[in-house]
Length: 239
Image 1 (cartoon, one colour):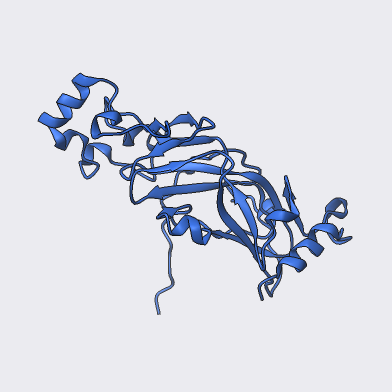
Image 2 (image 1 turned 180 degrees about the vertical axis):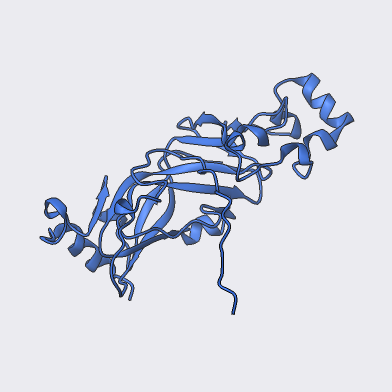
């Protein structure tokens, strides 16, 4: 069952003697009751983005600093005029379908990143690039199942705030990394509302994320690149 807004607030304000240090089942920092919804809590975009270095074509910018009222063109995506002319002459070098931009999830070298700090006035994101962002909010969750999703207004601007990994875990502690993708060139600003966190009850014996030795992301702060995906051979008994 999903928790209502008032029940989320009760969990935040109620210490649980079954948790270490009497912690409540839900911790959200910073917290404002104004961000509490009917059955969720609003989350906000932090000021740091990361992109995978291998996905950025040589001569292109990862984002464009947004200046209200300015007229933009394709040339604004390039470091200089020469790079733009090279793009016009050889567009396939900049096409993200080009295997030159291949990411290997099982290779640590694929996860080298470039950091981007979003200025107060915002940046324009490219539809051709995937961005790792993060929530301003640090959360801890115990005895509940947390997950995040986009707000209606975020979705109606065709901003995907989590590519597949919107589900959290009982025991997860940290800021949430966002896998951001946009359909059109789109402005994002630090502190803008970027999603919502929900909480559900579950049944069964607990296996908290922060106690699991195979957990990769507990305690993460800021946008966190992917851990290397292991290659495992799963042996099944023959019938």
